[in-house]
Image (tube, rainbow, N blue to C red; front, side, top):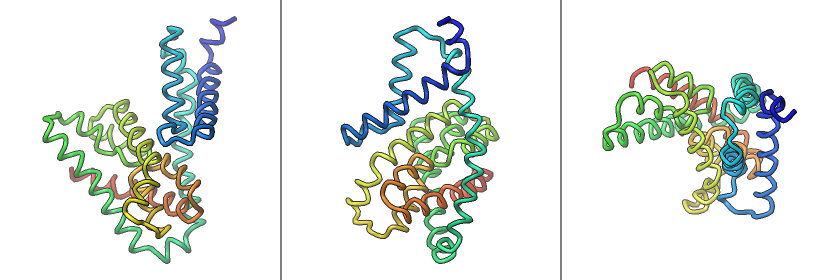
Length: 226
């Protein structure tokens, strides 16, 4: 019976949902920055698979179903932009300028570090879209011959880092404008950062969602010339 469960999609789905709930519980109990739900759930899943010697392929049967939901979820971001069209119209130029600056800084940092470390073109192409949401990042990476798995890892690291340290950097640099804070979070840490922005405030969450879409478009266009 256990073998049948492990070889079914329900195993990956159950483990992912259970680990995520555990991550949320740990974050609420500890309140620590490092106890980000995604980071905790990822560690729990890896530890369980390794300790019980469960093949990744068994987990992927259900885990990949969640990956399939990324594209429609990304498309649904357009609904949030539409709902916040009045706010976007009011701050259109600052938001576009901020997203352009964020996208250029992200791409430039990857190109510079790849050059300094002597990384080949495949690795560079995989890391280039690290600051946009996963579905868009994978499409950009594959179009340039990158490795999707490495791209996903880079996106997760950027997202978790942004979600963990965004409030700290906002205080450190005395960023009090909710529009600026939300735009910065969305521009550098996409969906994971937006989840954190939702905890901070409604305006931050709205601007972060808008920044995800705008940065995705800008990065897709800039990648054509890299």
